[in-house]
Length: 136
Image (cartoon, rainbow, N blue to C red; front, side, top):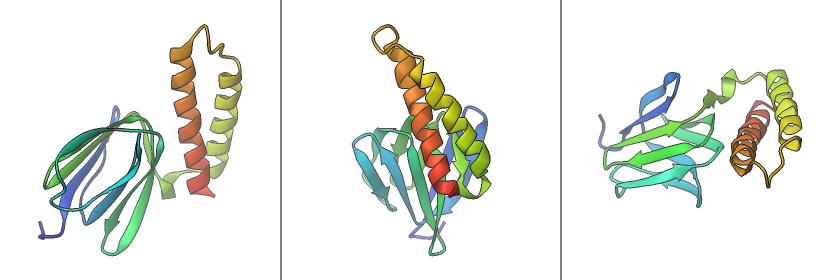
C-alpha cells in the first residue's frame, strides 16, 4: 500500500461491494458529509442514504448507499450499509420506477401508527432519489 492510500471496504447484506486501496473517501454521515484521508483519527459514525465516493488515480467514483455505519481506522475504512449501487450500474428507468413505487408506499403509512415503517420507507425513498440523481 502506498503511503497516501488506505483500504476501504463497502459491505452490504449481499456481500462485499467494494474492496480497494484509495486516496480519499467522502461519505454521507448523519451530521453531514465527511471526508477521510490516510491517517484520519479513528471514529465510528452512522451513514445516511446518499452518495459515497472515493478517489483513486485522480478520479472520483460514486455509489448510492443506504443507511448504515462507518468505522474509520488510521489505515482502513469499513462502510456497512443496507444497500449500495455503483453509479454506472444504475438503470435510470428502474430507479425511477423504484422511486415511484416507494413514494406510493410511503403515502400509505400512518406516521403516528407506525413510525418505524415510516423511517424505513423514508430511507428507501432517499436512496431511490440518490439513484435517480446519479443515473441522470
